[in-house]
Amino acid sequence: MSVGTKTLRLFFALWPGEAERASLAQFVETLKRTTTARWVEPENLHITLAFLGEVNEERLPLVDRIGGGIDGQSFELKLDRIDFWPKKEILWLSPSSTPAALDNLANGLTAELKRAGFVMENRPYRAHLTIARKAHPGCISSGVLDGPIRWNVGSFCLVESHLSGMGSQYRVRKSWNLSGSQAIPDDLSVR
Ligand code: 2AM
Image (spheres, rainbow, N blue to C red):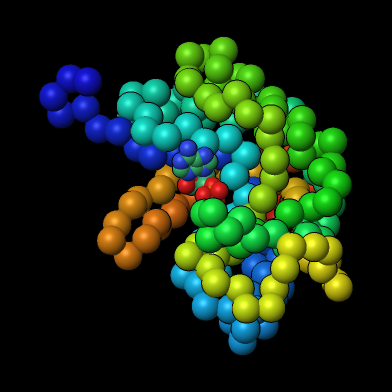
């Protein structure tokens, strides 16, 4: 890397709207009664679609074009599972059945990023929403939730991550609507 070249830590993600974020935060609050953990802050909750890692700033327009070139469909996501991975002490939520539109979106992004020369993980995509690290779940065990958290996914975004001693901080750089979503066009949203 040449001297002075800036890199950004980037990933594509599903970013919850206010309603889903509130449901997720409320769900996490109930877990706090029985579990000690380093909880992900509500404003940081998300589902990663494709992780790019450190990207040279000069490649940002290319990454934007890849995001904008994806022809994805909106879908309903039902987060109905909670899982605990003892080895990594991570708690996460996931759909027990992954909508085809979600698989297509994540796989489409990964394929386009690879085609553009980014080194991507080869593991099959598994949608998950990490809710806690360093978790010591008292009476929580992996399984199906009593009531799923429903999320109408109408967009996806490119996120920049900053690592610090206080954990990760995220900034949504750009987002794109998925076909069939009920997004309000910009020119109507101010009326
Ligand atoms: P995680 O929730 O399973 O940790 C930002 O780090 C986001 O990118 C997180 O959602 C993280 O998933 C995801 N991610 C995927 N692969 C990663 C990697 N190799 N390193 C760091 N984060 C990764």
